[in-house]
Image 1 (cartoon, chains in turn orange, cyan):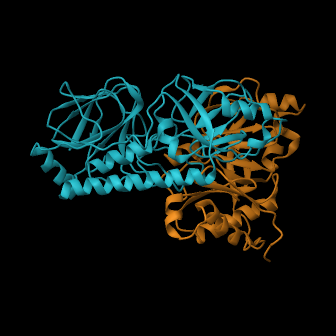
Image 2: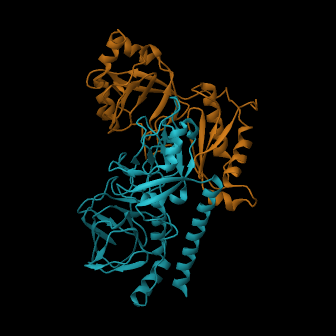
Image 3: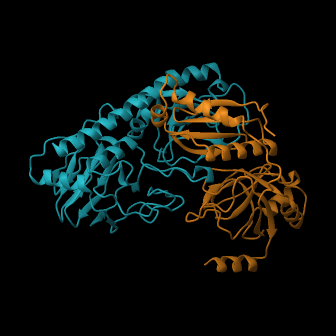
Length: 242
Length: 328
C-alpha cells in the first residue's frame, strides 16, 4: 500500500545533486524504501537526470542543472524542480513484500594465508577459529549499498558475537577478494588496497565485472551467505575462471 | 593515424568527461579534472565535447606524430613546443608528420589537455574511455602512458577537415579566450555552498572555514586535495553513515584538515561534509598546484546555479563562434 507517512528530507549536495533522506539509521524497512524509490526514479527519470546512488537511508540524485533549467520554463531553480519531481515519486513508494531478495552464496576459504587475522579474531572473542567460521558463515547478510570501490558491498546482518574492532595499524596491502570484519560490519575487498579490516578469509570470485551489465557480482538488496571452502576448492574456482 | 609516446611525463592519462551511470555499483566517475578545458579542446578540433583527450599533469610528455594531425592544447601552460617552436594554446594546431610535441613544466595551472581530431581509440568501459588507475580500466590499458606506447587517433570529421584547410592556407589568426571560465591564479577564492553537515561544526570552526586560508599539500592528487590550515572540529562527535559524495565535496576527517574530493573520488563517503565547491569553480580548482592557497566564500544555491548556467551559455557561444569562423 502507498506509504504517505514517510518523513522525507531533501537537501542539496552542491548545485548538481541532491540527497533524498528516507529515514534514520540502518534498517531493512528503510532499505526497502530506498530500493523502491531508486526503481521509481529509474523508470520515471526527469529531463537532465544523470544517475542515482542509493545508500543506507537515502538516495543521491545527480542531475545537469543546465538541462533541468532549459527543460521547463518558470522561476523555480533547478534544485526546486528536481525536488518537486522527487516529492511526487516519494508519494508513490510501495514496499513490495512479495518480491523475495536474490540469495547469493559467496565461497570463502577461511584462515591461513587467506585469512591472516582469523586467529586474532578468535582470540579476541575467546573462541576457536572453527567457531568464528561457523558463526560468520551462518549469518545471513543484506547488501545495503555498493560504494567506496567498484563492487564493494556495505553489508548488515553479521552475527554480533564476532564483531571485532579494526586493526590498530592498517595493512599496506589487502589481496582482492579478502573478506574482513570491521566492528559489526563484514565486507569483501574487490581490489588490492590498503585497509584496516580484520581479514578472516578470501573468496575466489570477482566482485567487479566491468564487461557485464550490471558490472558487479552483488547488488543492493541481495542476501548473502558465506560458504566455507578448502584451499583446494579455492584453486579449482580460480582455474575454472581462467 | 598514430602518435608515439617518447617520454611519459609525471602522470599523463586518457580522460573524457567521465564515467557516469555506474556510481550505484561503486564505479567511480574519473574523467578530466578540468572539464571546461577538456570540452574546449575537443570543440577546437571539431570533436564532440566529451571525447577523450590526454590529461598531462605538472610536467613532461613528449609525443611524435606519424601523420599530419589536427590537435588543440588547452588548460595549463606547459610551454609546449613543436620541433622546438612554442606551440599556441586555445586554438587548432596542425602538427606535421614526424614532428615532435614536447611539454615542459607548468608555468601556469597544473593540467594541460590535448585533443586530437577524431578522438583517441581507447578502450571504452561502461560508456567512458576515462582511465581509472586503481581498477585498471579504460584509457590506455587502464594505466598512465609510458615511453613507447602508441596511441591510435581517429579520423577528423567534416569540421576538422575544414579547420585543416584553413590552417594549411596559413591565414589563421584566432584563438579562444578562457578567462571567464577558468582562473589560473594560485591564490584564489573558491565559491562554496554550505555542506550537508555544516551545522554540526562548532561556531568557531564555521568562522575559521570562511575566513582562514588553506593550502594544498603535496599529498593532493586526482582523488582528492588534502588541505592544510587551522583545524576544524565538530560540536560533538556523531556517526555518519556512508552516503553519496561528488566532485568538490569538502569533507572533514578526524584530524580537522579538509579534503576536497576530485575526479577520482570514491562514490560514497562517511566523513562530515562542511561544504561543496560550486560547479562553476571546479576547473579553477583543478588547475591549482601543490602549495597554492585558497579561501572559501559562501554563495547561495541560486547564485551557484546562475554561475553554472552562465558558463554553459558561454561554452555554447564559443562553439557557435568556432563554426562561424570555419564556415565564413
